[in-house]
Amino acid sequence: MYDMTKSLSSRASRRGVLKGGAALGAGAMSLGPLGTRLAAAQDAGSLEVFSWWTSPGEAPALQALFDAYLAAHPDTEIINAAVAGGAGVNAQAVLQTRLQGNQPPDSWQTHVGRELIDQYVVPGYCEPITDLYTSEGWLDVMPADLVAQATWESEQYSIPVGVHRGNGFWYNKQLMADNGIEVGDTMTVEEFVAAADTLQAAGIPALALAMKDTFPGSQLFENTLLGTVGPDMYNSLFSGEAAWDEAGPREAAETFVTMLDYVNEDFSALSWDQATATVIEGRAGFNSMGDWAYGEVVAKDAVDNIGWVSHPGTAGSFVLVVDSFTLPVGAPSPENARNWLTILGSKEAQEAFNPLKGSIPARTDVDREIFSAYHQWSLDSFANDALVPSCTHGQASSPAFKQAFYDASVAFVTDKDVDAYLSMLTDAAAMDAETSA
Ligand code: GAL
Image 1 (cartoon, rainbow, N blue to C red):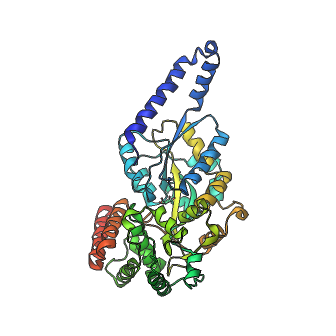
Image 2: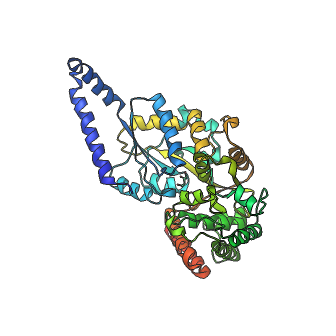
């Protein structure tokens, strides 16, 4: 877990060094090379980037962004303040503490949509970057709907670096072949159950679940919900227009119980990437996971042996999970932060980052040919399918509802109590409606 005290004090002492340089700056000439070095350090300064990208697939992708930045600004010291925990389950709590204590990093990772707006913009933690959108021409190269999710009261507040598809269903091709299972271009719940029964009979967990960082439970449900009720009803439920105690959500919760019958026993001990690794290594059949899982596949050099379909029943929909970065109010190095955001919005950085991360670029003018077969498939899905925001990844609903959704799903994975689950979601939606009234 991230040690905030340590990071803040090392930042303070680093500042001390830089300050010492500034004090000596006037005498830089007389100090010779040391003085020049100190003056350069003062100009370059540091850039603290806060994210939760620490897994074997995420870390190299983040490094590609750092490399793109350093290619243009080689003298900056980058401070990687990543906090482990998929979907930001730990990072977001650490960040809140820092923001409330007026200790922002120079830029942090967030999803566009409700997370960006409700959690950070409305409380006053973000500076607008509308001028960068104009000077860099981003409005011309990014889909308007995406930009709209980074916009509040006509100002833009973050720059999207990649668009993940949340409803992936990944499988090990060799394992399927060994067990006589054929996976087509799409999969129904019934087809999954048939494959799962075969795998279970061979002693192989059919569905890799990871509850150490809790989000995979709610993600499995939101994907199952989408597969059951379709994109319109899914949107109505997360926007508070439809009720959770209706037939559709109930059927989805019952299917969720069915799927949970096939999970690995050690799910509470595994992080999401460890669960994905069990599929990559042929120790489990399927993994319902956003395409950051593909980043793990790339990092583990397993592209040829991993197949994918949409989570059962969700072909024709694309669950949006859009990663972006902000400019904080009170950023310690605002110029470096703006340079960082400028790089993130560039074609070069998006072409370097997304092949490693599993996401597709937010820019539409990238070179399609440099992307993998998976990316091509996702690009087509993005262009043609119904785009629905993820609740698990903060885009679809308020932070309070998202938390309730996590809590209810954590309980459900263990107790499988459909009535209790639906009533927790109903209560959370009612509270949300009251707060926003
Ligand atoms: C998501 C994020 C992805 C990926 C995933 C697992 O919330 O958008 O970039 O990192 O969590 O950590």
